[in-house]
Image 1: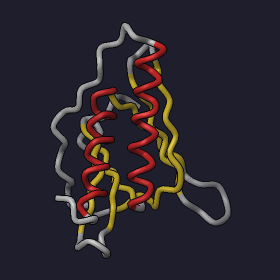
Image 2: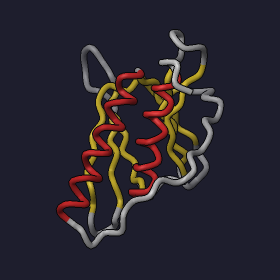
Image 3: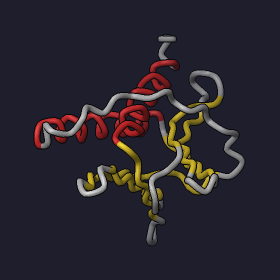
Length: 140
């Protein structure tokens, strides 16, 4: 899959009863939404930060990934599935991060969807996910 147009994490509802979403907009304009837990949003942010820090150490010639303006969540009319696990991998030849979203299932084979995001999109996603998670803790 080609690099995505946008990616975001956001929550809908009141603190204590919020529903968290990971939402990706493909270059084609298709919007794909996934349900996730607040703790998953925080863990994804930490995994991204760890990956970017590792890249800064191992490949210091790379420009620093600066966060961009986060995109607003579109109405998640259709949810592809509830996210279970995430995987991140850096592809140096394309300077892209592969984000793998694995479905949470009790039995059987989980669905797996992979997206390619720019490092700047990853940084933005990480920062925004942390801010969204903090909103429910009285930190506006």
